[in-house]
Image (cartoon, rainbow, N blue to C red):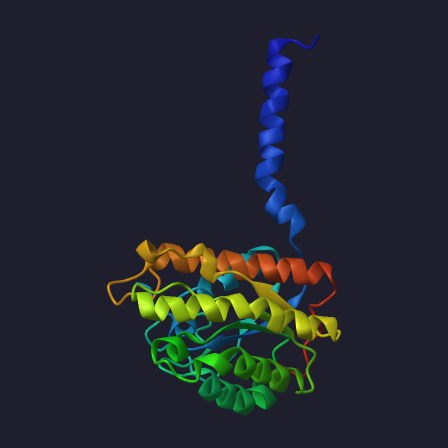
Length: 244
């Protein structure tokens, strides 16, 4: 039988190892050129620092020992994260408009990772809701058609305080796993991340649409976890060309 002091030491040691586990499961030494792609939530509207999830995701990957570069043609001018404010988040845009911006951005920015959270404006504006998953699928396909091998992570949408908007968001979110799986079955590096599911209605700002800081932090963690999982599949591809 072990002495009580030894047992305390072992329990403390186990606790310390568990605390270190997330870092042990992550990866280092990669170049992560990330295009945050979407609308106002991607841009960071509603966060007190205007960084949304982007800065937290950047810092988490950098802390692991990776070279991180956010890319996009619409940098957050109000954001406090001046190290890398680049984003392809366009407030007020629907899926098709974001897709147009993506097609303009890809030849210049050449990401090897794209984090996609888009469709809120389609749902709140009741714009071609029935075809929204199909339109998102076209955006993904068009992104993958560009020369860089790109990991695409597709997030669900956060809820909305307006019940009519939220009903449409729930239906859209329910369709996303199949949109992603269809591309994954075709051998493409596309993953689904239920980041919106980590946000509750109580986590939203007074506008009923945009998350508060803590919820943005959970979205960042969700994208981080998805990137770590994708790396284990061998889906973090070498970047193409110099940094933009």
